[in-house]
Image (cartoon, rainbow over all chains, first blue to last red; front, side, top):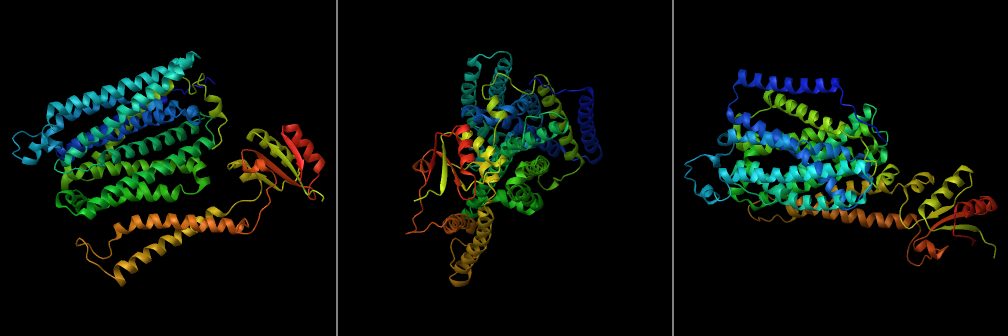
Length: 387
Length: 167
């Protein structure tokens, strides 16, 4: 009942080495290859978005389950909750984008004389951009902090009020999240191609985030079970996570296709430019993202017993995570970098660095409390859950 | 008329499952189990694995090919029309129709397959062993010729059957 994940010095040192090694690799690539400012900032933005999405997806995972009074997930709820503790770090990393605004977003350059962008300047201007950024992050950080504190309170006290509060926090979070996740994806990703817009873009990015988060939760469970923890997470829980990954990968494809089909069919030049840029210079990543994010999970997780096998599921989750990295890549790079984009040491090094920082923060937060919330009224149900 | 079956009626999944497990343990052969919703343990351990999922997959596979061929035939070979300057073989626009028609085909074909396998067709009256089985009760059925009815009956009563009848 009181099982703790031990954040040993060995794990800490390995993660720090990964983070520093990745950073050195990225810096080395910058010094040697001189990739240009826009490519560096585009990579910072890509990794910010990827790991922010994993953290936010964890909060979303908990909120949707708690608002429905779901029981099955309570045995593994500390894992998505630990993911949310990355949000303050994500805020600091996202603020870095301030120094790369002109390289990333051409609408932020002064003296544009562009009638389309002048028309959008009420939303797309520097002060309001950062006011919104602070607003999104303040809301996310405060709400997830409240959720975490509440869970901690539930570990020490069996008072039902802490349990009932969860639903209230989840409701507030979901409303706030629904509005801000769309708006933040317009701000940070869609506004790279400032002339173009798509009304489904916010949902598309959001589902990508949630799929990443599910994949990451599966990988963390795989890691923790491999290290001898989480005896109580059984094949039935794994099966449900597999079902969620399968279903939301298909839903991601559904949104991808909804966006693509309407633009392809409408054939309006100001809309099709978006896909023309991707299909001409980014053909490989454009189709690779579809294969890794749809074909692999669709066929890989179709059979019932494959969803229950943790090793197999973790392999698929790893592929999906790479697939979503590539998906962000094809969202950000064509607009921000253009023809000079590529996947090299800079991309790999920076992502490895971010992964090290992310795992450091998340695993440390996970280790701070027991892995089970022992006063959760749904715990018994979850421990005996049958999928 | 002699009764051929022994029916144990349960009002909870848990009690029914414990009777089911106990009967499996004592090797009392169970003829059939009626539940208001699918219970995985019964599906897995009753020894009759359903192959409907494999059939469903095959229907889906062939329906996809069939529907795409049909769309290709109508839109490209038989009656090509120029709409919006698109090529006749406008593959992305075929996909939505394909998804809908494949779902439709799988549903209808699986329904017919299931009905055929379960001997359900118009004019074929199936016996209803216990009215509760059509409602919210769990019913375990034992064939008296194949199993020891007295032992089965005592197991059912022990584990909390609300009713044990012969029919």
